[in-house]
Length: 255
Length: 359
Image 1: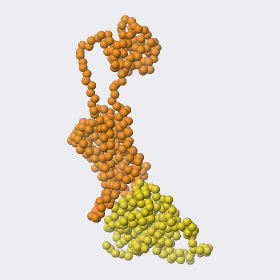
Image 2: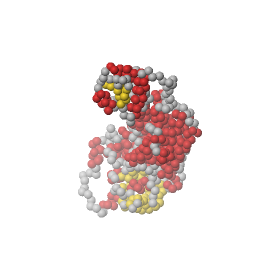
Image 3: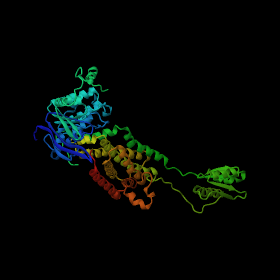
Image 4: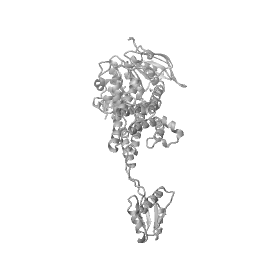
């Protein structure tokens, strides 16, 4: 296996759908062990970019290396090493949590124990519940669990917390932080700035199909101070969500 | 359709992806009560309904009216009453008798005269009236002491295999094979595609060949249940004959199920929505429900279109099933039908795999 410092290397990536240019010369360099965020408005090209990196879409042009390999020559190896959560997958409602995970686990040569993954995503009590009976947050955690059963080196999460309640979001955050702590890499897209700020080592802001700003959250915030006026000072740096979570607790409310 | 994954040898059988995928097909099917109903219960209800509606029974006895205002016509009335193959009714007035004839309550009116002759009043265009005339005349002449010059004897037979239920059970089996093959594959695949589940699977190392094979394997398993349920019911409840060899019948069923699976796969190969594929499936199946001889023989259609009808997969399946079950034909006897079925199997699979949209 080729060893590399790059989890992901993207140069001059381009993709069009007919006349619509979705990705227009995008560059990315993501280090192994890094949690990297792609943020940007709807239609900026985030999902197209991430799906090209996942090998689900063909690119028109540009260079792409994933874990030091290319989709052209190492498809089978790459599929074994990536964990993917798509934006809008609906898992089969008729299956139970454990059955779904067992199915996904069967696709991989090597991977994690299903019971262990169920515990990681805190679905132990729902192990034998049908997917159709799960709440939105539980379904999303199951989707992440499906991405984890193959014991991936690189995790792609496309808007993993969209539409979730604050408790579920924080639970997913701690999942992602644990994964990162084990030294592996994550590429995630999000619409929530607090999420990017909390989770990501570095963030790329994408618009019109290319990166318009890149850096650590702190660097990006500092860079903006010079160009736009400081917001009125607040009594504290807490957000309303912090208040909400402080008052309602961090435990998941999934019933 | 490239890679076939080989699992590590230590992996348990139940944890192989082909086994898991096939198990999922089972679970999804049996956890859908409506699918179970349409596949197993509905064909039996249909068979019961049709079996009762078209059961064999004695032909209806013609109703004959006699104008009998007084006792003088007693001889004619008695002759008619003593013949069990007709039903005689007497009328006191001519208006009453004419009304009964006009409204079809009686098929024939017999008017006896004082001189002992009789007049038959009836519409010669009505088949039952012509029949009633023959039967009534026979009864009256016999009552008048006519002697038949030729002695006759009768033997009554009921031939199993010539009844409507014998015709319709193989037809229902063919229709069921078509329905489960086309719906089973078409609906499940397009449902997965529309929910982006197919795309999610593509993001794993799952083998595409195994994914498609899981549908065929589960189809084969359900096929056994479907065939046994319907045929078992036909044989036990209606004594439908099974004159051909069971092995040949099994082979016809398997090849047919695979062919319809291929057609289902082809129909599902591009469609993105369940609504879209449902329309397509009905579009494909409707002509076969009508033309392929499920409920009535396809020979009712004009000769010009017969070659086309013979090429429809369901026609070939129904014909092969009937030849096997009712006439005891060997595999050689159904070779032309099998050729059509295998042709559909190959063409549909090749086309489906070329066209298949994996996302």
